[in-house]
Image (cartoon, rainbow, N blue to C red; front, top):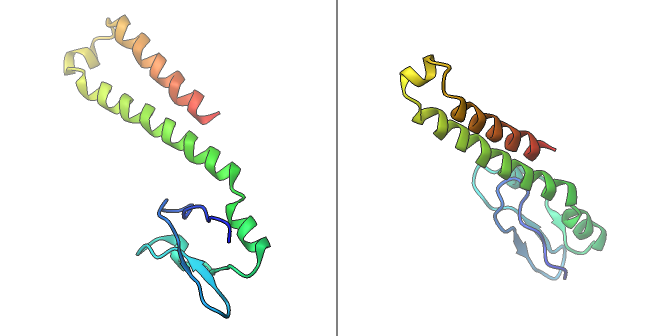
Length: 110
């Protein structure tokens, strides 16, 4: 049997139930969307290949991670500004830094 990729919803490994008739696998994580989906029939190589064929999902997951990191940095940066800095628009260095962070976020979306 081919190795199965983790659940695309929670990232946890899925559990395989190997038995003589109808071996299957599914996500066992509580409250995960993957645990609510139909099981993967391990007798059918096509089902395993479809489960593992998630290049686009993997790419989106990585982009999501990069975007989340960029946004968390923006939030941290914004929280570090004093009230006077937020009101006073005369902090060019911070504006440049903000623009760079925004560019990073936009780049992560592409």
